[in-house]
Image 1 (cartoon, helix red, strand yellow):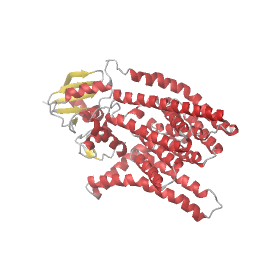
Image 2 (image 1 turned 90 degrees about the horizontal axis):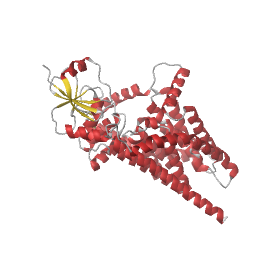
Image 3 (image 1 turned 60 degrees about the vertical axis):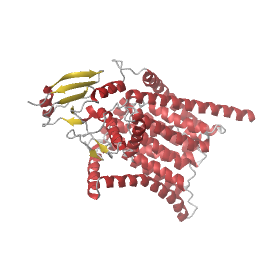
Length: 515
């Protein structure tokens, strides 16, 4: 017996060290990439602009126009795709580091790492750090390894990973916390912060309601009033915590928009935008729609949708059948229903974009890795199913992990582009060139100038090209983006000639005044 305990202690120590080493290696790559790539992906630059303006005291202001008519700025732009939880993290980074190109993304990576560390801390109080760290490590490694075509979601200033990390932390606190009022309020707060990152997280309130229903149905021998009190009180506490950050932000929006009329108008415009982005209205038949989505998923990720779903179902089933404790079962219910809801939304209702499919993957792996939390080496009969699920998961991850290490992790150490300049260095040189320029700075459409709107001093530096664009100025072009095809561009561009290039990405042209 003492020898067996010693072997288990050594195995736990080795598993802990390995898990933490892998998590550190993942974050070294993410931090290195965010420094070298900077504001890589246009949308992230526009979110960073809001963070910069907020940090500067100018309010929740986007000084870019997604409609490409007037870049002077708009408070609480209704088409913003990432919410205040991420924007505030970016604003804090800018307060600390200044408007550096890497600041918002770096701070978001660190924030997400802190949330995952919180998950490890909560689980480890019940199961020990070996199981807790290996569970989070397996979910993170698997999710990153199979999404290399959309690796920007992990290091850029986007909100998807933050939203999912906050949801997982909320579920972990509900399942593995001590169910005190403070913990339940905290779980709700995490859920509310997730909603304030991505509004799609509203769907994740349903798993909490399902858990409350399961608690009510559990133990039918007890009076229904007792069961109702036991299930309803935690649900109300989580709901109160969820609403708290939302109400605070809406109060700020209400004040900034000048009262009820401005607030209602802003929300009406935002709802119209959400409708345009959230539902597929092409009228495809069910079989054609599903076939299209499955093909897209397989083309964008290193695992098929069906294989991923089987893994998730196996992880949930193994946990529900073999776990001796209620906690892993409750976590299985929470993450399992969240995965199922998100999968159905993406597969059947959404526009079918790959960025929506991305949300399915970490949730699925959070289900597939659940046996880590419940497998027991002392009862070998009960370890067969969860052990088999984990073995299958690890076997399927060998190739994606190898490809991630070879094609993403290692190149992060040598990030030079063909010109010898990283994206960040090209942006630095462009910013230095434009910093002293105070004339009109034209951009073909908003994405061409998003990074410089963030980098340059002040705000509202960019000018849209319209029929009235008559004055002399400089034209900033990002060669990775298409140019407009409208009549305003066709009339404007012949007045411009190349002035300077920065690497292979950026070009500045001088445009004369209209005769």
